[in-house]
Amino acid sequence: MQKCEKNVKNSYLVYFFISKALKKKVLLLRDFSSYIIFNMACVYGIGNPLIDYICSVTEKDLADLNLSKGTMLLIDSDKQNEIVEHTKGRDIIYSCGGSCPNTMVTLSSLGVKTILAGSIGDDNLGREYRLRLKESNVIDQLVTKKESVTGTSIILLTNDKERTMNTYLGANRLFTPEDVVEESVLQADLFYFTGYMWDTDNQKKSVLKTLKLFKDKGKKIAFDVADPFAVGRYRQTFQELIADYCDIVFANSEEARYLMDNYDPYECCRSLGKLCPIAIVKNGKKGSFISNNRVITQIPSYGTSIPVDTTGAGDTYASGFLYGYLTGRDLVSSCNIASYLAGEIIARIGAQFDKDSIVKLKSFIDKNFPI
Image 1 (cartoon, one colour):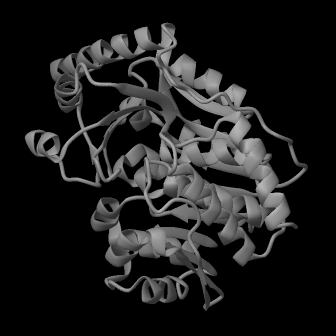
Image 2 (cartoon, one colour; image 1 turned 90 degrees about the vertical axis):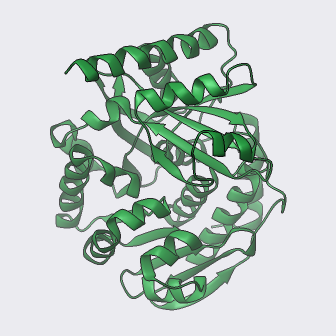
């Protein structure tokens, strides 16, 4: 109990400095509002609301911190403080993030009705997060957990723009099945979640409850595998989830390799396509593959071949595909929209688009991938 209290106190010290940045408007948070709200399907997501802390580092920094490049590590408050101390004095960008929340925000900015469930702390960061959801027209079903703090993700970018994520879940660990609003679940048409939810028992049970509610009603379910280390921990469980519940699954080539035990992205997509109707394997600058009822199509990549920040690529890809899918476009067009948006997001720092960019992106989509 004393260690728990110590961890919370240590985390509040970190949040104090971030909160000061918020008040000074150093925080570079995206100002979102929907370009237009369509009368379309509603997406319900359960995710980890996190404040992203983005900092450029060297390979030596990662070695000094004993971190594996390109992975997502769950950390405690002591490790969080160690990384913050190590990067003190460097340029830091703060933003509201989290994998599923990024997807919900981008979907909402494109005009899709979205609901986000999760947990935040009773602190300034949590209140700021609620404000940003309101500005982006995401329906806020976050639960405040007074006994904890809002989660953070320290994202370390090396010169090749690969990101190493160090996530302190904080209040996210306390989201329970009782926090799922069944009325909202019943109103939604598609459930979206990621593999990150399997790292805490409470969140796993919450997702399983929601999966059963959607499945019983015959509604669509989309799953983003999200992290190769998560696949390493829950490979068989994820395979069963995909086969038993999912209509759509997203994985990048590395995640798919771990999941299907095959180095060939095409073959991974073919194998995943045997588990669920729509399977997508993203292969970086080489594009992606989609299996639609076991018919595989290769999708080209768009945008820059020299990324600035890959943090939100997968989240944005998912939002682009779901946007196309929910607006009635064919699956190849939906994948092309996904690839286009992912190519655009990696050309900037951060995992979300600003309002002006959304207007331009939406215009391009409507012109090149019409309904």
